[in-house]
Length: 268
Image 1 (cartoon, rainbow, N blue to C red):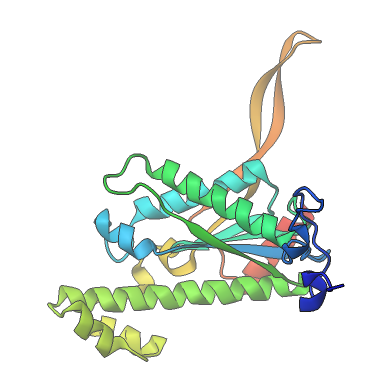
Image 2 (spheres, rainbow, N blue to C red):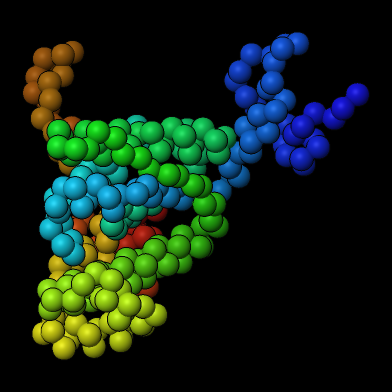
């Protein structure tokens, strides 16, 4: 008798919810048994082929605040449906941090459900835009030790900073009359300081650009007061609630300020 495929391939036993029986191929759902470990994890969502539809919408270059707002609204949805401790985003990337199980333990389920939510919410946030009928995010799960959370955020913020320098260097060359191809060729392989020299030649100070373009955008829960009514005591009351706050000027995670910010957030 043949081994089940999951055993043959060295995967954990499937945890599929599909029906079992003589005709079933549940044993071949070899990825359904892969679950997240009991530790913090980031779920990273990336827009798939977003460059094409941003061109269609003729968004402002090199950054469009409207687009950033759509991504922030998409990230905010996860604070309603799930319980991330924070979301860090830049460009079309959303990083959700969960200190505990996000509601599912199967990686397949996390990836498919969260990518689906992000895709539909982003499309809804944009409203009816001509020529944009669908869009999608891909999704991956990245487990981290608790003492690696800050390092992960430093890594992604460094990527946001690199993207910012690349975007503005490309933009100034295009504004000077160069073609996209020649601008890309000129910037290929340049380090950040070299990109900044290119910008300086065209009188652009990257340090004076908006903070969210350089540092990314951060979402986390904040407390707020809400007026309500107590039907038992028949009187108006003020209650404390929590909601997702969008911070367009987040701390630098590689500083003492960034470390203290995360420490306070984890203590809440």
